[in-house]
Amino acid sequence: MVKSVKNNIQTEGLKAPVIRIGVVKWTKANLFNGVFNSILTIVTLFFLYKVIPPFLKWAFIDSFWLSTAEQCRAGDGACWSIIPANIRFIIFGFYPHELHWRPFVAMIMLVSLLLYSKNRDHWKKSLVYMWIAGLFIMGILMKGGLLGLSSVESDQWGGLPLTLMLSFFGLFAAYPLGVLLALGRRSKMPAVKTICILYIELIRGVPLISLLFMSAVLFPLFLPEGLTINKILRAQVAIIMFTSAYIAEVVRGGLQAITREQYEAAESLGLNYVQKMRLVILPQALKIVIPPTVGILISAFKDTSLVVIIALYDLLKTTRSALANPSWMGFSPEAYIFVALIYFVCCYSMSNYSRRLEKELHA
Amino acid sequence: MNGETIYCIKGSSENKIIEIAGLHKWFGDLHVLCDIDLTVYKGERIVICGPSGSGKSTLIRCINRLEEHQKGKIFVDGIELTGNLKNIEKIREEVGMVFQHFNLFPHLTIIENLSLGPIWVRKVPKKEAEETALYYLEKVHIPEQANKYPGQLSGGQQQRVAIARSLCMKPKIMLFDEPTSALDPEMVKEVLDVMINLAEEGMTMLVISHEMGFAKSVAHRVLFMDFGRIVEGNTPNEFFDNPQHERTKLFLSQILH
Image 1: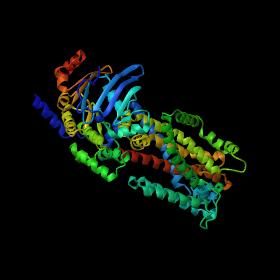
Image 2: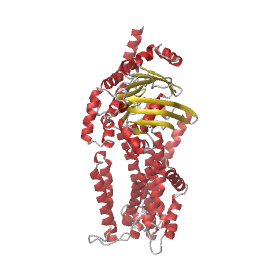
Image 3: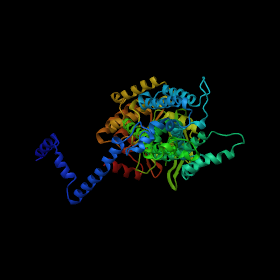
């Protein structure tokens, strides 16, 4: 009896059953199994037929790519020509036309540094120096006034470099600040704890728009007369403050997921608070919260477009300004699709990278 | 009513390494440790047993201040345990602890687990710390696992790594908090063997355990705790053959079947 059972298990365990069905059978089984599903399939197909071919016709077949606005108006298709015609303004805003190569090189540098940093094998001390040098050069390229580069005031900055700058510094300053706030919120020191809770709850209780307004309108009131702080910097600070409060709460969740035993094991080795957190607790906690953290980073990236309300010309605002030009008026879908694509590429790379990082760290 | 009763190995006052006097601890209203007096001498091995909730774990966790005591004094290696963080860290350097659930750091490899403390606390150069780590891994018979992660090891192997991790700090005292009770039965022996080796080398050990065979062969003293008190303490032979208190007799009859 026992033997036969054992034999059965063995023979069954030899190979898994192969299930393979053809296209027709699959369609029948999944799309037309029953009256309701059949109707649903037909309606959906009809809807797709009505939507997709006209869109493709508009976007690719009847479209204009390098024409003038007049030619576009004569035709029915998409007028992608608005983008090449205005590309430099959309991307660089009011940055002096003949100096566009400078923000362009700066952006290339930023993107290559980011791509280089993606690989975890490159996470060494030299990378930090590369970033410091890189950011310094980017700063000089943008601002000028050194090495024979003519100076460009920051109120002329705009477009994609501005968006990238606000988000990059926003995210990279907000993250460590958020971690510190999370640690502070769990601190045993009442003063630290209270301050952190107050900060987090106050900031989270206010929309980003009002923080931006405050940074633009209220903040200068508190400064001594004659002293002004750059508008971009003020917006940057508001974005950092806002994002860090959200990151703090996510990180706190991660910290709570680490068992007390891990703390005790670290303590019993004689590690002090900083060592314990840095070497044992945070590496585990931050890994757990990669998905929600990236969610916050992505939404913070998109939220930088709110700086229009304090009259900064970020990517979205330069696009709208290009549309305000009478000759190109009315071609907003094309322009917005283009900008949406830029945002999508950035956000998608972030979420893609986070998934990869999660997998790699899951060892 | 205390463990001080009779036995101590080389009982001169210079040899004292842990001294606990009049120790009390409460969790809220619950009086978990009640007037504990205990002196441990260098090289002494003590096994503590008792029913769950009797305060055994809390007692040894007070020794490296994972728990704070509210009354009484604890001296470890001549330093009094108070709120002073520097002193606490100094004592923790000298006191190794092995937990019931191993508590290895899951994000670090075995060798990183072992060298973390020496590198950061003892400020040993990385290379030297890794050599020490390998030495102790060999002592616990798993040098081949050095580059794996804790999750890839069996419970018995993890517990041996945990012991090696404590030993890498070259501690003067080792505390064991039920080191074998979370293990599958066939893995208990491999861990006990490592502990017996350690005992033979003269390590000062406080072990919470119900492995009575281990207590008989290794301990200088066996303590029985109940309701936050040390009910009885004696040499293993006396303790098992001739228990003095009714409560001890009942307990022994239950665990020895």
